[in-house]
Length: 454
Image 1 (spheres, rainbow, N blue to C red):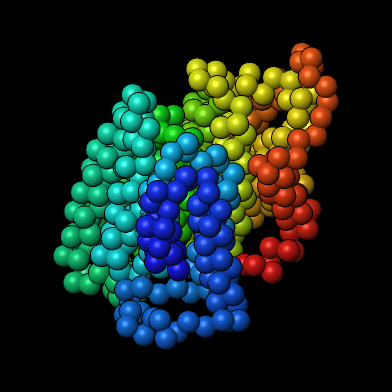
Image 2 (image 1 turned 90 degrees about the vertical axis):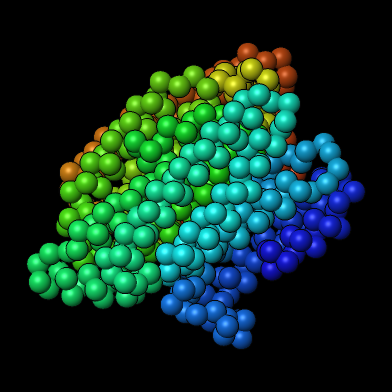
């Protein structure tokens, strides 16, 4: 639906203004998300479409379909919330949709080659999108950095995949799991498997911006157009972590060995991301480092047995909704070089509707009770508490640090320095932001609603 629909819309809107075609893209993505959810619940079945796809290469289980639904809905939200470019042609929207197809392929990948194809289909449109504002020198720099780091991480991934094939003679997750289980029985794992696993993980850690493979992320996020940055921070991060979790499942027999080096990476990602975010003066750059810290939290889940994947889904849904909302507010109030926390000065006095969205999204991404963000963090930390006790302690410390920078906008938003009277704003964007805020609160106050989805 997404791929063929996007091609049709791209050619249909080749001479149309982007703002006129944008709603059709949002509806297309939302419908694909709904169909994915319905199929995950066996309400609809599209088995005949998959008979020609080898199940050992691409296979969507119930959780995979649910995450496809989450990705599609979040992409629809981003396209709907962010303002359209004042130009003809819908190539930017089409590239975002094609990149989403790569993310979906990553989620369904059960084979290293398919995973690599998914990563490339996800990344290549983003290389173009990062530099889509040709008059912005920072955007050109972001595109070049993202392209070079993407090529670099892909090369590392391919070398690791070659080592894994050399050590196991297979490239499917299921067969690798069986061979590693057999090796575990005899007490050791092939050196090529260890080396390959490390290199493939390094390639994936580049994609999710884990420390020390994060150095490209803040500059690329800051230089790219706001809606592209929002797409990267939400869609790429979610697709990357679901793919990483599926890959790690194949290496569960090596979990104890993996923890020896992946837990320190998780710890420095949490602390490094939060401390760097605390020092930022730009709101957008703060969100970039915030996404790095969330990568550290999610790595803790990858170090568990991953029996309940709904924990991962809840956390990613909470992160995606909150981040998309914060990027929308930043895009709405940032003006040229004015991109710090002061852009929200007097917001409670001038626009109560956006104030609600800012407060709810901030509380959720900080993990404050009453929001879905708290539910996500509680479930993730509870799952990791036993196997990774010290990791959870560091994560709690990182969460405390994060409150210091997440709440900075409140210092400005609650000032009444404007002469504009108090008002409710019921523009389309503000209405959508209130609806998303209501979802964040409803899922936080009534978490059993999440069980209806995951």
